[in-house]
Image (cartoon, rainbow, N blue to C red; front, side):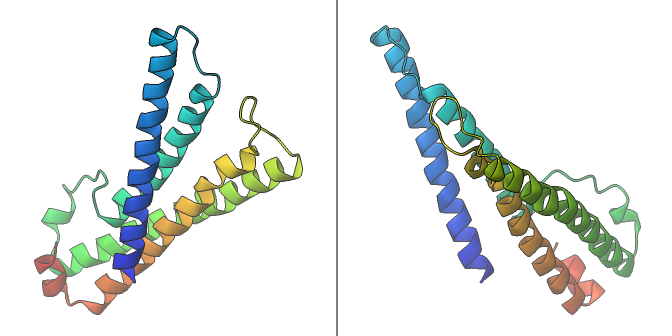
Length: 162
């Protein structure tokens, strides 16, 4: 299941990043070659950058590519390292649930209820903000999967698989 989630997330990121590049190239072309800048490209680039950033952060979290400081963990025993990893994943879970999933859902709800639209594209802002809860749920899935994997390993297996 995790491989499927990884693949879907990865190709979604590739598509969004490709779309962002095409959008920015079009903006530069229309501004400097045609002398009349396209109106929608600035806003679209901003929205795509938001989506790429949030989804990229979720993907990086799932691939263990996020920034971490591991000075303390190397000084602990294998069992201590395992407990520390579970604690860190739990703190991330708490943050993601409260800020991205709950807070992001409230933000999406209110922007949807008030019918807030973007100025140029006239797209509901709730669609743009929906990446917050989506990426939060993705990180939640990854962290729960990591905790489950860590709990089923012995301390020696955990250290070996780092």
